[in-house]
Length: 474
Image (tube, rainbow, N blue to C red; front, top):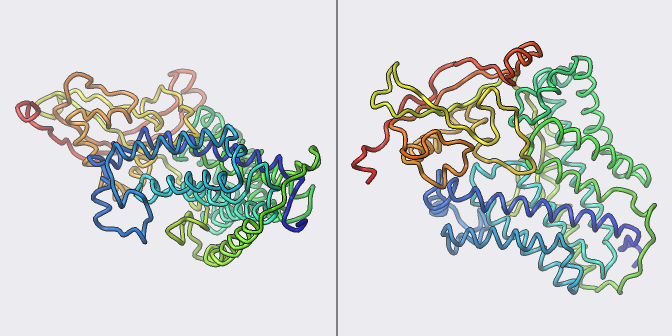
């Protein structure tokens, strides 16, 4: 079936599958390490409470049948182990149906986590991983030639990721159209990285070139994905270089690496490899791939309508299985950076004489002398939500006070989400939440003080909260 097979694209398939399995490993390990304090049975937004109010149809998940923190750990670590096996090439040792089953189980396990993860999992790269993971089920293994239709669906997904992000920028903040958004973005992005200070200090003409190059890469280059080789491969290579630039300039969890994995599907690997011979393609596999292609085509209607709409939405799923989604990022760029800072004191009265000590988080800015760290492709979910809380405190209504309550009793799982607990032996008596204005230091300030940030207090976000009395802690 020549129309069905892309015999010269076997290397592209291998690269996509290995890269996608690597992202799955990170996603499952991150879930295993962070989920319990965030959404576990005693977490900030407990899953059992959620499950009492949603149906399986609205949010398919194995946790509808049973939830416990231990069972969640089994699911997360099983997913990580299965992803490791796939990254090592285990699927190529199995019959075609067995390889597909491995990818399908991996997808179903992560879908189960995302659908109960609430705001901790309300990020575009979660849906992107699920959509890409669903397509990977039907990519086959080394016993069959890569299906042409699946490779085209991967390009279609990559196109929507890039083109959606480009449109939301062009339609959104005027600074994208006048090429000034990057005057601010490197400083105000959610999670700056080790090089973000240097990117922010680039000359403004270079920032304008960056913004123009972004429009080119996201609005024009994606169209070339649907042209013959080598043009499509060149377009994919340009996207990969752009994503690596983003990796250097900030921390966006696994979004950039997953986009790179998708771009690998469009590289012209046939130009550097020899076609392989394969077993005859099973009829059931051909029928299934064609059916999935038809399903994706039908489900693409709403995402395409969203792309063409003047009211375009970012990062939305239109079905509970996250099969075909819409994507986009930074339709607006904040000009000022605000940060939530949490402090505790062991003073019995939180007056002017109280000495307050600051809690440090692993990723978000805190100590002004600490260089922004590199933690992507890992996703520090609490750090990210604290960034959103600084932008809009209303987003944190449901979990910020419970977080303070956990700190007041030195809750061990919650403390593992922190970089530094200033009260390692005895919990604080009071905890408060402050709001600061942060900005990167100038070159002169950096030389003089050694600080990466300068901050100014804005005010209290949450006044001092008292913990339980010593008798109640016993």
